[in-house]
Length: 182
Ligand SMILES: C[S@@+](CC[C@H](N)C(=O)[O-])C[C@H]1O[C@@H](n2cnc3c(N)ncnc32)[C@H](O)[C@@H]1O
Image (cartoon, rainbow, N blue to C red; front, side):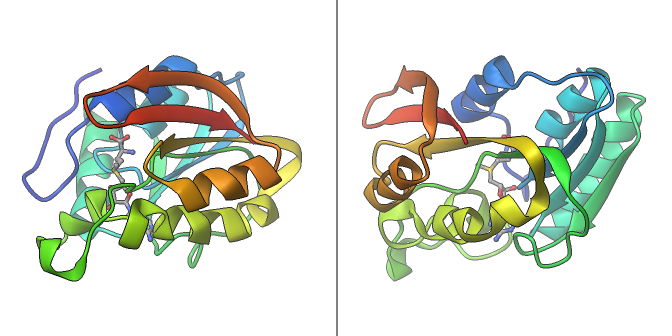
């Protein structure tokens, strides 16, 4: 894959690669890549035969994901959206590598790049918003891949209530990254 970066957009990292390793897509499936950033996960799915819609709250990410899709010769619909606000339809697969780092008000960097990592107090805020609504956007028997950090206690509790299945994890210096299937 040929992925360009931008200082205003999340650069693919350990969490991205852990997601890529675990997302299994069948030819022809409809995929929603929430929080697409550079577009890398959606592009990976499109290269595996999926019809992809990618969404991000950051307008710079929308622009970059479109450019990266073009560089990789895949066709992806990219939507600027705060979670599901501007998403229509139902999908076989919804994937989300969310912002998951705990941030207090004075830690915020400001600017669009802040949304790449700022998960609010305790890091669970955006994840909980996503978990409230994702099922409405899944087809019957659809599935969701989501990344969560061991720091996100509230999100982990909610995922347990939803019977999420842990499918992979990676230990980092001060946290553990986990991929769940819901
Ligand atoms: C950790 S980055 C992941 C980027 C990319 N998917 C990857 O794996 O490299 C989180 C992404 O979620 C986006 N994001 C944060 N809050 C969002 C929201 N409320 N709605 C949609 N996207 C959001 C950020 O702008 C950022 O691009």
